[in-house]
Length: 552
Image (cartoon, rainbow, N blue to C red):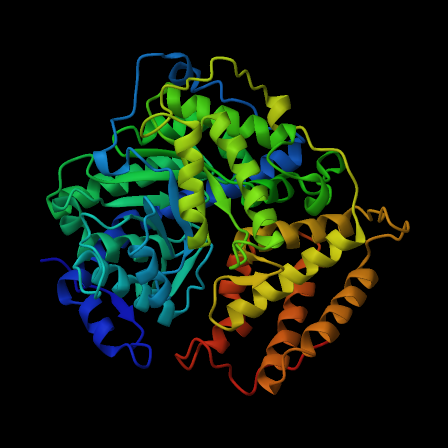
């Protein structure tokens, strides 16, 4: 006889008792237990592999190259990924960064003309117990047509479900005495409750996979998909997943990642900020990889980013897979006759046209007002549902292309901007929010990653400001952070808001002044006592009054 099931689950967040009971049935808990216990060891192995590769790069001084032991996959012209189902053959414009715990925005997205919705439990979401339960339950409501005035799931924008990345843990569930990997918690609940219904409606289940660093991680996801489909009685290949290539090491393994997921692939996605931050993550101590001011010198037209996007498009289309671009973060000013509206729309259109001309099959926007202008941009510049016929034979990308850092320096404006984004992101997390708005655009963990990465690297290399020659030092960054607090406190009247902001600034300084680079800001925050204690009462937005006093 099998032994007793060892599983512990935190009580429901206040106000979500009914949702909790819906999600955590006896059958769903048994499914989660079996999923986690089956793959726990392999999750640990891929995370150890990340540490091992990083240590090898640091000790050897080597640079990544296309893998020799998988060259047979890259040189074999015959293999293809399975064709995607009709619902995702046309992926021109998805809504990005949509945390499904935000019920009103989720409903508006479901009512929109977008092709799809990135239902985000990762970059745009703060993974409090409240937000995870509310968000997953809202997905159930959408799948089972329980929202009023929303099209049925077979006609609504496609749900592209984005579980957390491998670096994130779920603190509110333990299996066999260990906290559960966040992506298995999210994926397991979503598949158990929605997988069959999405499949029956020919509308999924479709996923985004975040922060995949190697083909071994893609192989693990493929095993999870096969296991899950067998458990739920779904045909092999029912699950389709788009892998976000957000790490420089993964850029050298794109064909291998597609190959591992060839029965389950919905293509690859390229972005800008998580990918750029990965250079600091992997090579930040090296002077040759000093990344200049992102506000002035880093964009998709630079050689290292343009090469990455063109190689991704070429790789995908060569193998019959869709290639999608990143998210347009600007917010469109409401008055269509205003100069600011025209300026923002023209800026977004210019950058997204570059992606279309590179051959992407779609991209994301945050602001729902940008959906129709961007769909029009596709209609004017492409033919048909996608650009799979654009094989980009003209593209040849070398390792040097992928690793070539743009020239440029550091500006005072860029340093202050990065500090502000880093502090305000941590402040948002302490408030139970996964993203926030600053200077006309949405900021999330991807922009927070590049912001704190750059500040850490500039301090590490004692970089000088273009403006006045000052060294980016501990003292300068601390002084600028204090100045930022003075400005922000003036518009935050309540004592609790001010206290939270001071704590966020303390935590930001702790991250950027560390001797060794913390791999992910979200991992750091998710393990940080201050964040955990801020939600310990079960209220995502209420902070304990005895929060540690700020050091500043």
